[in-house]
Structure formats: C-alpha cells, structure tokens
Image (tube, rainbow, N blue to C red):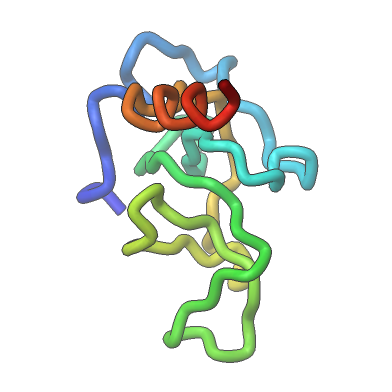
Length: 105
C-alpha cells in the first residue's frame, strides 16, 4: 500500500491521530476519502480511495464491494479483516472538481 501514498493524502500531512475516524457504512457513499489502518494507535499506510459497492477483484472472486483508487487500478479488500480501519476527509482533485462544476452548471 505504501506505493499508493501521496503527499496530499498521507497520514503525516498535518493531521494528528485524533483526525482519523473509525470506518462506518456512512462513508461508503462514493466520496473520496483518505484510508489507513492503525497499529498501536498510529496510522500506517494511507491511500486516497472511494467505496464502490459493485467493484470486484479477481483475487477475491466471491467478494463484491471494495475500496478503489480514483483511477480504478488498485482495490483494498475490506472483507478479509486486513482492510482499512480508519478514514478522514480528502479533498477532491482539482480536475475532478472542475468536471463536477461543469456538469452541474
């Protein structure tokens, strides 16, 4: 997962441990968030992802619904007990914001 780390969404980019929230179903609405898993109360690898209820991964053929990177190339499996445990908000990329504004207007 460390290859997915980015300066904008890393655990060390100006946030303390208290900024991370436990994962609940309420964030599984498709919004882009920063995800991590905790070890001894410290955030570990982080990734910018969104929940997709229809996403699949061929390595886990019986599972449906994964955390997916914005480009769709990487998934994080929440079904095996090794998925992300905490999240925090992550700003949408500027290119996505401009596309969303154009489609709204």
